[in-house]
Amino acid sequence: MCISLILSNLSFALWPIFLVEFKDIWKLTNTDVGWISGSYFIGYLLLTPVYVGLTDKYDAKWIVIIASISVCLACFSLWFFAVGFWSTCLIWGVVGSGLAGTYMPGLQVLNDRLNMTDRVKLTPWYTSSFGLSNGISFAVIGYLFANFSWKIACYTTSISAALSAIIILFLITSHNQKKNITERKFFDLRPAFKNKEALGYIFSYGTHTYELFAYRAWIFTFLLWASLRTPNTISSELISLIIGIFMFIGMVSSLMGAKFCLDYGRKKVLMIIGFATFVFSVICAISISLPIWIIIILVGIYHAFIMLDSGALTAGTVSVADDNERGAILAFHSIIGFAGGAIAGPIIGFILDINGGTNNTSAWIFAFISMGLGSLFVFLIQYRSLVTRIKN
Image (cartoon, rainbow, N blue to C red):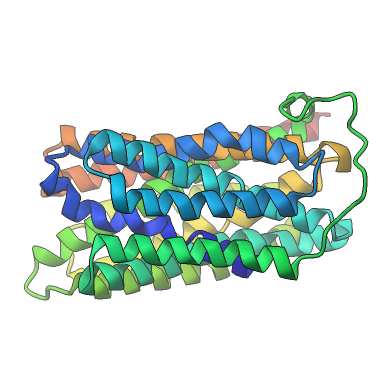
């Protein structure tokens, strides 16, 4: 499942990297660029209630296969039909909708085949593979950006998504256990609203995802700008490889955060992580003018901080959800989470525009502080949840 997720998500960095090229060709503003980035998560958001909710009725294996094929076709469509803002928004949104049918339904494939103890232990490994897939995507797409064309990148990601479907088809056994949810329709999300414990993790996941995907949507553009304004210019290919390394470190960081939560108490650890990550976003903001390699180290550490609570938040939701309601609760978890991702790109793009654009130092200062607000809200939500639990 982890390998399949990595293959189906190879397309993740297509727009974050190639936006540098097409922003000028299509005369886009930073807000336009942000909306295209956000369309990926809007597509994810719209299809999540359908795909994830269906896992409460049907074997998630087949949902993942269908979604992987849709990613394959959408990447081919980017090759042939993307010619400007609206066409790219639409097609990139379809790519994002494919993720809706692979990420959380893939987690349900595991949930249907593992006991509760293994679910809590192994969920962070699977969710961290999403971060790893982002890293591999940046490295591969960055290499293609530097050496080949947009069309070759689309072709590569299409083949990768097709391979993902083939792996699921032949290596994952079918699960025929009937699920007892006859009284609830697949798009009914009421179980999530009834589970107050889950809601704390879900809304924290939303603000966490806002910060994470704001970072991933704009980090290539930021590092390219930071490199070009210094004597020690580094290539776009090296920048994308560095970002890929960040993503791999983020996977390790996510596993560490999940382990800390198991050992020392989930809510308390999440509070500490949230506050510390916000502080580090401010450190990055006030360090914009330092030498490029210091900046790279700082933004790399910042990403590791962001990822500390990634797997722990999803594992928290899984741990407090009943078997027959887990699909609905995870659907709402994904909806709120990737709603944060959907607004992240446009918000940061707007902040950049109103502060002078991507070539302005102060614009990036405000951008980093705005990203960090996501972790500040994680701290506040978990603090309130912990206080409520103590009172009760």
